[in-house]
Structures are given as C-alpha cells and as structure tokens.
Amino acid sequence: MTTPISVQQTSLDYRAALAAVTAAAEEAERLGVRVSIAVVARSGQPLAQVSLNDAPPQTSQLALRKARTSAGFKVPSSFFRDKNADDVHLLAALDTHPDLLMLGGGLPLLLDGECIGAVGVSGASQDQDIACAQAALSALALKE
Image (tube, rainbow, N blue to C red; front, side, top):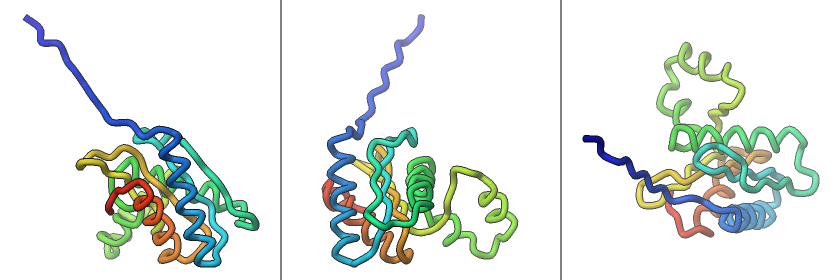
C-alpha cells in the first residue's frame, strides 16, 4: 500500500515583496545611501527588485546574489564568511560560485521557522545594507 504525499508551503507573494522593497528603499533614503534591493522567493526567483536613483549599476546583481545566498542557505548572506573566517580554502571555493555573495546585506525571510524567501541590499556599507534589509523584514512583521 502506498501512502499519498502531501506538501504544503507558505509562499511569499509579489505584494509582500513590494512592501519589503519599499521599506528597504525608505530606510536607504533615510540613511542617505543609494542602493539596489532584491526580494526573492524561497527558490531564489526574483519577486521584486529596485535600484534607487544613482545607485551603481553593479549593485542590482549584487543585491540579487545576496538575496539568493540567504534564501538558498536560509541564513544571512554573511554567515559563511563570519563563521569560517579562518578557512580560506572554503571561502575561496564558495567565492567561485557565480550566484553566491557572502557579504552582509542579505537576510532570509523566516515565517514560523520556514524560509519563504530573502531580501538582499547592496550599494552602501555592509552595516547600512543590513539596516535596509532589516527594515524590509520589519515591514513584513518578521524577525531576523
């Protein structure tokens, strides 16, 4: 006898992604920085992305890579660099992956312990990028 499999997942929709991007952008404006922001689904698929006026063009891809790193591993994008600072071989190997970025500014969106997506911010200092990403989480009533 076979048992049917049932899988149920909570999804992040584009409305929530837009609210997160807006909150991060407003924090960036408050800080006086020009950044790019990306919100991705759990799969890493972009749901919303924006670059503030005069943000360096490279930052849009960097924000997306930070978001995908956080969504994929379900940890802040800086996790591996922070936890493995002495393991230069591991960091070098991870740095070769074109869709990972282990700098601060990417945060997973966790709902009841389940990663439903992530936000990535790039273009300012790591602390400022993280502050903007945290504003996105706050807008969705999520905690880091």
